Each structure stands twice: as structure tokens, then as C-alpha cells.
Amino acid sequence: MEPENIRPDADESKAVEPKAAESEMAEAKSIEAKSVDSKIVQPALVPPTMNERRFAQVSRRELLKVAPVLALGAFAIPSFQDALLKKGLGFSDWASARLFRRGHLAPTFEDAEVTPFEKFPINGYDVEDPGVIFENWTLTVSGAVQKPGDYRLAQIQALPRMRQNTRHVCVEGWDVIGRFGGARLSDFLSMIGADTSARFLTVGCADDYYESLDMATALHPQTLLCYEMYDQPLTRKHGAPLRLNVTTKVGYKQAKYLTDLKVTNVLEKAGYWEDQGYSEFYGL
Figure 1 (spheres, helix red, strand yellow):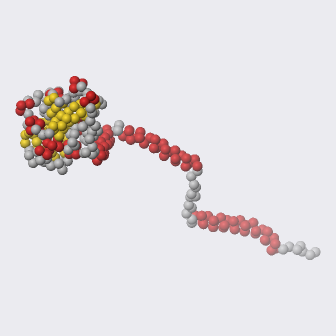
Figure 2 (cartoon, rainbow, N blue to C red):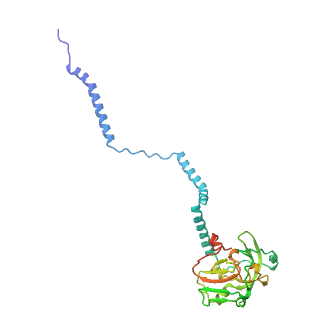
Figure 3 (tube, rainbow, N blue to C red):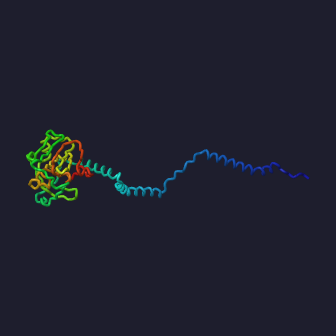
């Protein structure tokens, strides 16, 4: 008998092929793993979805809505409150001073529109009458002036007299039209040789009240050293013998019972109410 036609090469091939395949696959995986390990995989940049964009827009709108509430809430914090108020008032005063026009006159009124004298309110700082002795009264002038010293009422009354029907506005919320008379403060400043390039004018009062004016307001043609109301000498309750009448300012700037006047570039004290947080300029 002839031996069977056995082909060792073929059998060997069948037996070896699976192992070779497995080896090749393992080797390929090993190479692939090494390749992946050797690379820095960058995350894919995925554009935001419509929902994400809408959420961002809504978030911004909501933030804008609550911003005023957050700002208001800051006022409830004592450490922020005073600073915020001071900065706000400072900005308001700065803007008002730059908008002020020295030649722009406050409204004046007909005699028929004037509030009757007996209905003109009386506001006092401490007492209605500090007991000024008129015969001994003088206005003491100091600061940046050529002629400092004590001035009697007759010297002020010798200046041209001006009478005007103007509105008096109180910070408490009321206002009336009154009739005031006196000398222009600008004429008095000229008489004493005041340096009108100085920034301020300050006044002291018999009742210890004190106040200041910026120089532009002091030189305004309607700002008076007032010694008359309703064509009669100023009464004690209204500030005799001399008070300020400042048509462009609120009532607390119009000090009564004047005793001292100073021209200066430096404010040691802005005013009784201003030093308690009120506006320094407070133009109308």
C-alpha cells in the first residue's frame, strides 16, 4: 500500500495560523496602546447648545434686574452707607456748581403773589431770639479782604438797597414767596476789598449757627445782606439785625443773626447741616 499523501506543510499551516493571528492581534493592540499613551488627548470643543446660550442670556438679564437691589442693599451696611452717601452728595455738589450761572436770575413775583407776612413760617436753629443787643451789634469781617474789621449796620445800609419778591424754599418741604430788602452781598464784598478769586465765604451767627457760600453764589446779583422784610426792618424772629437772603439756595443756607463774615479758600466747617450730611451746594 502506498502511504497516505500527507502534506506536513499544510497541516502545520492549519495548526499555526490561529496562534499567529492571535499574536498579530495582540501585537497590534500593544502598538495601538503605546500610540495612545504617547499622545495628549485634547478634549473636543463642543459649541454651546441653544439651551446653554439662552441660560447665559437669562442670567445676564436677571443680574441686571437685581443690580439696583444689590446697590440698595449696600446702604444697609453701615460701613458702606456713609461712604456711598458722601460720594453721592459730593458728585451732586460738583455737578451743581458747574451748572450754576452767576448771571442767571431766580424768578421774581408780583406784589399780589407775595405770602402775607404773618403767614411766613419761622424756622429757628436753637432759639427764636438769641437776644442780640442792636446798639452794640457789628459784623466782624476777616480773611482775604483789604479792609478787615467791625462794620455797623448803618455802613451796610449806606450801600444801594435792593428789594425783591422771591421764593424761599425750605428743605422740610414747604416754600413761600416773600419780600426781602437789603444790600447786595457783592457790593459789600467790593466795599471791604474782598479777594473774589477766593473760593468761599463763611458766616457765623449770634445763635452759634454757621454757614458757607461758594464765591459764585456770594457774587450773584440777587444774594443780599438782608435787613428788611416787607419794607420793614427785619424782626428778631426773622434774623435781625442782619441775615442772608440767597434766592439760588435752599433755606438752611440763608443764615440769620449774622455776626461774622470771612473770605477764605479753606472750609474748616461747611455749615451746621452740611456737617451732619446735608448737601454743601444745594442750588435751586
